[in-house]
Amino acid sequence: MVHGAEKQTTMTLLKLTFQELRNRRGNFLLGVLSVLIATGVLSGALLVLGAHDRRTDEILAIKQSELEAQVDRLRQDTVRAMEHLGFNITILPSGQNLGDWYADNYAAQTMPQTDIDKLKEAGLKTIDRLEPVLRKKVRWPETQWTILVSGEGGAAAPPVGEVDVGDEIALGLSVKSGDTLTLKGHSFRVRNVKKQEGAIEDITLTISLSAAQKLLSAEGQISEIRAGQRRVAWQDIEQIRAEVQRILPGSKIIEDGSKVLTKVTAIRQVEEKGAAQIANEKRAREQMRHSVQRVLSILLPLVLLACVAWVYLLAADNAARRTVEIGTLRSIGFSVSAVAKIFVFRSILTGLTGGTMGLLICAVCARGMPILLFIILLPFAVLVALAGSLIPVQRAAHRDPADILRGET
Image 1 (cartoon, rainbow, N blue to C red):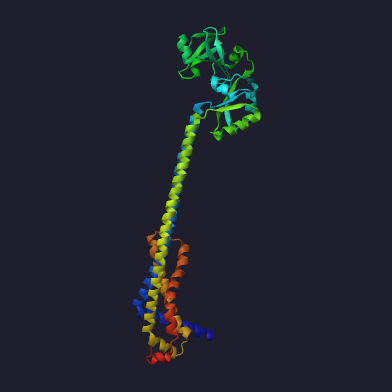
Image 2 (image 1 turned 180 degrees about the vertical axis):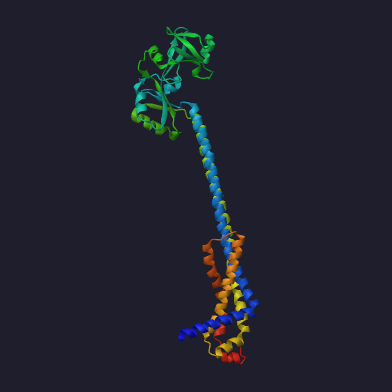
């Protein structure tokens, strides 16, 4: 019976609440508008910050993708360039003096040709395309010139019995492809006349490695090993030196860095510049976000305080206009809590209506809203309405009904 009486009382209070809303629509709608503004401003601020963060992530992702694509293009260009540049690593015998090598541009010392087989069998990771070379500066008895003889063992080397002639020699002897040259009593057919290099190659006769070894009395010997630098070791001569010297202790490794330095430097500059641009963009976006946060940290409390004050004034006005009704309800037996429930129900409806409308409007303007944000902010809207109504409700519900009916304030 008690439970049924409480239920009937609750139904009566709800009925009185809805009747009051119909009779005082203006006051209710103003309260709804106040909660709508509070909820709309807060949700709008959160959506603005969220949209800013998403846009920041998009901008940084785009810039990072553009940087990676640009670096990838440069790396591909470098790979293609390396394939055409040929050899840029030279391995010299252990006893070779580098000062003499740089001065003479050839190695006076030699090493066994089998050393190249050791390197090939080792499966090197830093260099590839190994080719043996035997080079020596000699006196050409047939012409009395001092020239450089280069015996090469690669696929592009002249076949046995043929020779590639440097430009300066070709001009001095007026020879061309198909002519015959004699070197230390050995005849060679001119395969090619090389273009002018402006370097020692212009006074070089290039023959097969086996022919050079026989001509220079250095059977089974080579003076250097030419190799191509792999991508993993670009501009890292120490890595190459460590790997090669592990197999050929004491050997000297020379890098012609000019062949890859420009492109590798360009890649690094692009990477560094791109990373700096991304970092600057991130800082700028963070500063923008902090500025927005500072403005919102000032604006939001003021707006919320104004909305709570507005709800308070509306609730106080509503309570004052319903003084006689409150006194009558108290005189016929309604308790303080029962009377307070009428105002609480009204505040809850105000908060739910205003909060829902404010969130829906923001969702439409922002073209969407996370459901979690909706779930969090709707109770917030009810709290705003209850916070503004708390004091007027307490004052109205605790007034003595006798004083009210006598017309005392």
